Image (cartoon, rainbow, N blue to C red; front, top):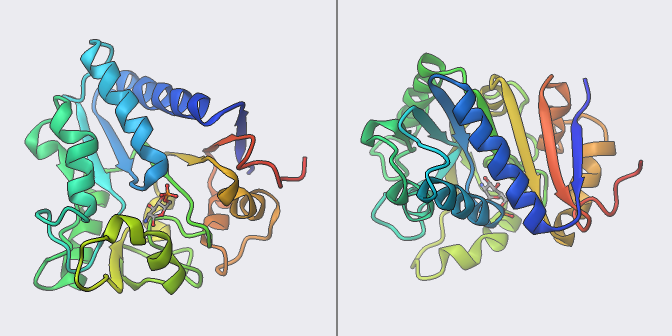
Length: 245
Ligand code: GLP
């Protein structure tokens, strides 16, 4: 098993290619289940998908989505929540049905129960046809931080200080920064039929090098993807600059 690496000339090309892969998947399935990621990498991709919808090139009526993760304590009303991000970036601007998107409730009364319930939903309504993934600087996927078992399910996790620092810009305005998150587990993610990993910019070069050339190990969560049979990695020149051929 090996990752299909697609090296593109610019971040713009990565965005265009990712949007094309996603829209082709939506068109090719009678009912398409997508796993969605947040983060800065995906904002231009969702923007491109909205443009394609506005031009009549795609519809989300036959799409069910499951988001990867959410901060514990942040409900959909919080502008720092991934729920808010998804509404603003995609859901409010396309024709997805109200019951079509699934988001974790960060402000649920009992986050561990919310995690178990969500995992069951993914299994019941899945398998996910295409899972979108970004990569954290420390190799996290979703919020599966280093040390996460490769067979882990959706659960509450403690965030690494470096992850909180990397995401601080999006958390500005909160009195207390979240220390925990609910994330789909690595085992849950690996059940997707196909996975599209996207990384752009030189800050991701070390993480991409470890993903492509490093050993499969719990200390680098993204390396678990090497054991999946259908992973495509889209990178620009900066993100792939440290990969060995
Ligand atoms: C975040 C999210 C991930 C995201 C990753 C990269 O913390 N939990 O789902 O893919 O880190 O984010 P960015 O695209 O902003 O670099």
